[in-house]
Length: 331
Image (tube, rainbow, N blue to C red; front, side, top):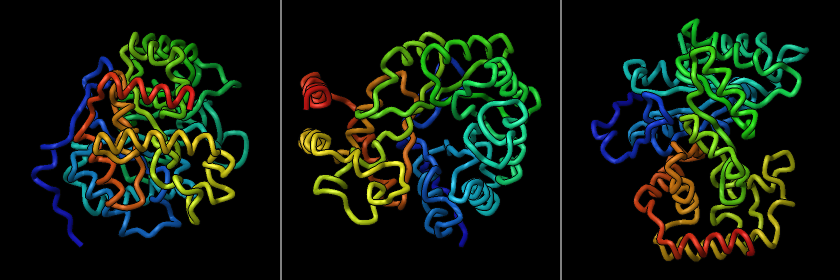
């Protein structure tokens, strides 16, 4: 099946400058954390990539361990690039990461120079690429000197294997330290990828200020709180959902009565805005101009299209924000 990108692919997407850099990112980016692995069916997620690119999504976010099994999301994405996007590579921002457990032994985890550079080399082979646009330290490493981790990121830029560098899930103080080190290596930190949603707001406790002051972009992952900020759980835990899976990242004990009450009230505000709850949750993050992009996943083209529809209404009235804050704070 041949794919021809839409000639109107840049007409409706909104792009924001990523911190103090030369890069604009789409305000909605596509993450391949779930649904693109070896256990998934190839053609459906191939069409999700098509739909994303046709909608102006230029940023595709991966990591070495995405799948399952680990590495398979990169392999599948590499196949799709080769089959459908060879002549469009320069229109894309492709990112990958290393930092979580990837292979046995002492060199396949965290943030050593050995692990980061070896992992990036593996990722490039899996995706059949000469370079990635962004290479991240996927999580802070309490055991390795930060100078070593940041120095490894800088060396991937100097070797031409990545164009920009980023960090993920670093708290405010460590982010400032990382930013200072990368500046000293003349390879500034482009972007930070934290978990951020209406239900996960730790970034507001200093991190967003650090990013703004240092000209670092922010891309929020898990904006829908693993599906909690959708209509999926309004009537309990549906069979086959992430919360129904014992090994899933969203556990059933997180779907509390208190949270469902909050979700129900938030859903009422979303309806008054002519949005789904998911659309309002995405728009709520983008109200802060320091948020460059929101990273969404998709199990179908329909789900992706629904998330993209959030761009139709990104403005909030003061009273709406006040009501949302009251719900999130007090229930």
